[in-house]
Length: 407
Image (tube, rainbow, N blue to C red):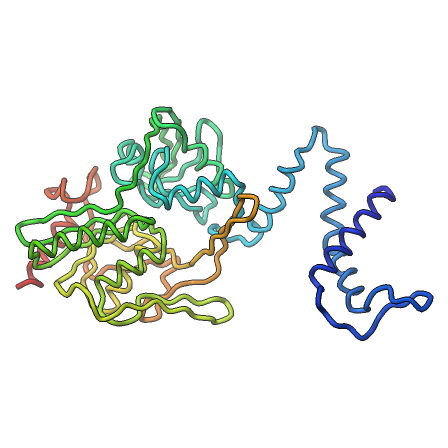
């Protein structure tokens, strides 16, 4: 490393140290010819910072000087930032570039161009489908919960590059994207499936409602985005005005979304009490509560392995309060909470900051919620919900059970 670079490194570290120690008061100082050069404690911090960061900066300079090809300094910095989060070995904590962060936030706003699947990093470091969004090209192409997306347009991807894969799957409506998925067949053998999918404008209608057999209300929630609570409230009021005697909430294949929206919906269904609480590694807890006012009619909730995160919060609160009955199959099992922050340059990050607990103190992360009544769907079923009631054995059971509750 040249003398000039050494001097630059020291200057940078002095500035860095002065910033982080600004405002500190120190009695012991380093002196030279009766002049105060640096407080002793700040000197120790300076040397500690130098030892910590000189290796990184030295390697960066070596790469720039010796790598076979010209180095893109922005990409080099992005790689360092991504590495910070990857070192946590937490699939839900990630640094995102400006484009990646923009793509991520689009999903909570309800409209974007793409194929309509919700994915998460799997423990096997593969991009795992939580669920396809109902009525989207991904669902029509036959993508299922648990599928692993291993290639997009012929390029291989793993979970540590999930954001790049998601960006590639998105795009202008009416354009094509090729996806290769890995799926386990009935015998547990790997099956590779190549799909050509035409992108569409994904307008997330996250709430749908209907009346089943005269007096049973049905509301399906496909995700929790910024518009979901208002749509849910409107549909719930419409059903109540029609004098329904009971209601079925369908959370199957709902991958979650915004916690505050989930809490608002839970408040409409529960009586007074805790909806969920979160806890940091320092033991700090934050409680979300519902008030007394709520819809007081028989309630059944449908869940399956595609019900995750906020869906599990709602289902867990209803189960713990004995407010309704859960029917279906065990849920996905995501019980950690991420803080999302945008940085000044448009980039951003997600960081797992706490885990959540159901009102009874249960952490379902990696475990899921077992329904009160387990009902398996037929293996060859292509569609669930009111439109396919004759094959949807879980919905059939929900109707049967809520009739008993009404009587």
